[in-house]
Image (cartoon, rainbow, N blue to C red; front, side, top):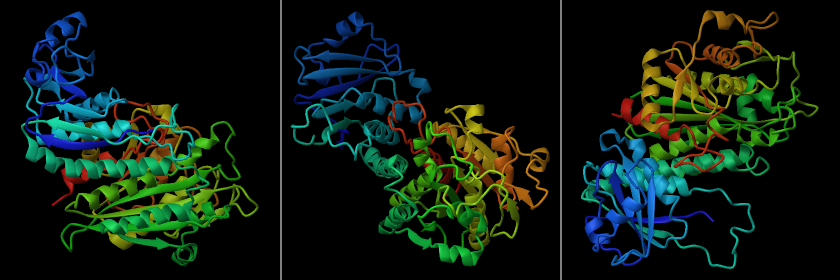
Length: 497
């Protein structure tokens, strides 16, 4: 059963039972809150015996400490005080949460001696706790080994810091970010029999409650627009496609929006070019880009971001029935450019090319960023530790790299070039949808580049990071929600007025 927390921020607090969490930096002999939680001075001896030095993410657990008003003291190491980053506070919160599975109430003494704790650091610590606690167990009928116990109440957490007002203000934003990440994780984790294009569109429609304008285009409307590439992917499925347009108007009235476009293949069999059976169940997550865009739009609305933003997601299912498109078919995209379908499993770019063209043509954005679980080739190059970044604009690329460094949703810039572009030229159409095995992630990006004109554009290939990526202190979920924090940081740092 997932943990839930109920947070409060206070300048001072004396624990009455429960767990007292005391933070300490490396090399220091003092811990935050020691005078309150450890009046008998148990900690120095315990730290010496336990060889606790304050190393980052290290812990020392002391049960029933003599003379303490707490039932348990958790000494937690922050590492080098001078090197602490925003992300380190997230990780610290997540690492502490992992030690609190059986707790009922917790007091966290945050202001470790030697550390300048800001309100944002306090909020990030709390967000890290929530992100670690996330789990997706909606379909488990037995939640725990002892299912006879009543549902666990939220763990009451009091965070003690001198920056109470700033922490409370920053936590409003942190909660919005958490909600957006969890929405994206939920969408990726949902099974495909539950979350089809229509159901996904309905989830996005719920953002209207936060003030987001949401339009949903049906198959008929997309046909009128000439979206032959997107519709070609969808024609093998009994489930109709959808294109969802989300607008957040938080900036100046005439200010051009920044646009985010997400691949939303709710399940990808590969179509006629069918995938191997082993591991195909993971293709329920092939809509990770659309999930991230939806989560981001939630964040921007929930925190009332001072920006105009557009989120567009192309939602389809790629199935191999008698109506499915075949290798060798030629489709006409919304741009009028024709595409020879060499491999029906290179379907994401067909969805994105129409969505990109529609976005650019209608909204004339100042920049476009697409996210897609697009190629296995990017995982061969970068594994699951970085997402691939392709861009026609150096400034936009640098902004994204900086946001990735801050959030540790890391990006690695990959090349584009005429040599790769030639690899997708077709004998029978304007282009083909794959350039072969070599440089597969690059030729996929070159394909998309043909649909953005001169608009500053970036493509993020998140195939290795959106699902099944390594777990860490702030993510224990199969669906990671990758991209939500990254793009919110980009908006905050580079685009908000």
